Length: 167
Length: 264
Image (cartoon, rainbow over all chains, first blue to last red; front, side, top):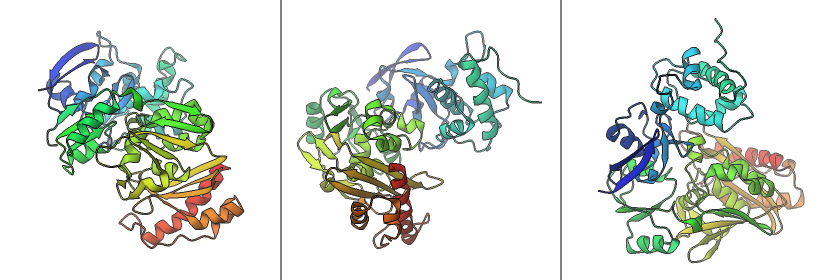
């Protein structure tokens, strides 16, 4: 079987896969990184979003072999080793930006890419448009948008700490 | 998905050799259309040939009055490229509205144009600007390239290498998206070029097409008012649960007006 060598959350792995193995299958089944979810499996819902070489992609719509040599970051790679959450994760918790939680890993990964690519800051409308590739079937978008708006202030260094959610 | 062999050649010649030797091998770049099709087992290739390692297919550059975009240019690259924004802002704007962020981070112009989905965006720009499709074997005018639903002039084993866009005086694009799938229900790309006015309609019919009545009217008077009274015939247009052929025909005029407003 062909082999793929890739770096996932800073650790290099060499894995034997089939030609048809998807990146999300490699992550979940070979590496047991089950934080990346498979939702629709038709490239629409965004539950499987991870970063490949710094860009958010749907890992259900990429062959594992296409990630050969790539740097991949999954939801498991965000928090610091001591458990300190990434500012985006912290914001999702503070702003109650999840209900069932199924879409959350993909939402967080898409949101981080969105914020990183817009250092000038994003308006509410731009955040909503930027989330076009992620579906939340609890329809919890409102708090997700608030969380991202708050997280970007911390990620761009405009605030030292996350603004607390309104009571 | 059925299993297949995976090849990653580093030159166009090697890719063409593999594709020519095996008629059931398929090229893949971003895979944003091919992989979903393979999951549905709509297609059973013996091998996929990953083009992403071929340097000859990459790059965006301006050459005099032309903009040359390599087949592997991703949608987000076209949307953000300074040369594209300066030369053909309507093309950059279009690229920034294809699919969603994650699709734009993987999908390529060569894949979209080769696939010729009736609801794709790029074919409207290629036809509307009168671009030239460059393959490993020849140069094909846009007017000869798009031949029908998912059908192009590409022969088996022939690879799209780049697209040469003549830089227009003015160009604009507008589309109506299906509110759920976000695919194009009807779109219009209008351009005022050195070789005349061109209007390409996508989404509405089985294949992108030129709207001759609008081209004639706009040649005399480049303004949204000039096309406002032109009714596209519904004959042969797509009708489905999302909209009738008559609805799409109506949208064609509305989108052409908006495209002209966008073009300025």
